[in-house]
Length: 194
Image (cartoon, rainbow, N blue to C red; front, top):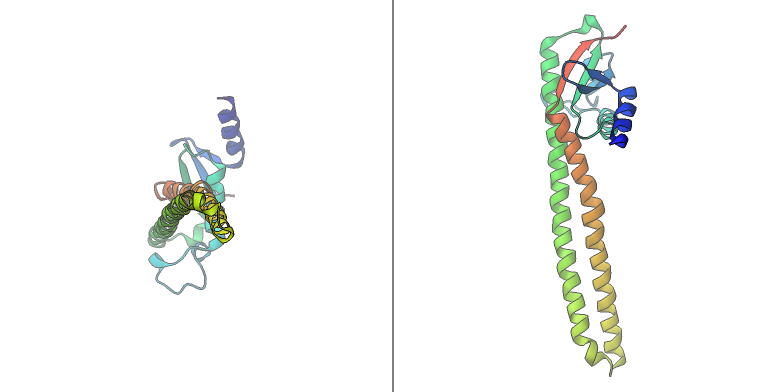
């Protein structure tokens, strides 16, 4: 209980809290709307890719804010640049980017699950084969080497399955939760702080 309060206090010192919604605010200062998006992307605004550094910043911020807390994203722009239509299109494009990132993460998760299944099946087959041939291998030297190879291969494949499940897949699931939280969060623009 005390640990959670410490984390919240630590996050509160880094991020502001909206008193109306009790959500942490990730604040980003811009000089122009174009800074949100990748300058090399010539797509229409609603399909533009976000600036990779901005995505990295948002992902880092999401890891610093406790997972159960609400998040809002606030972009600060000079007052003279205010354009409601462009803001709405930018918000749509940002949410579309979050959906694309989540789609790619989901694709990675599916690939990891296929790898996991392959590793488990091959590991079981190798180990069953090794145990089945073990009695015959006592008599022949080359067969003994093959059995040892099956044992080693089976255990290596089971380790790879463990690695994919507990490390690669876990990290992807965490990233998915981070971007899902942003997708469900409020994104808005305000005039630059003075």
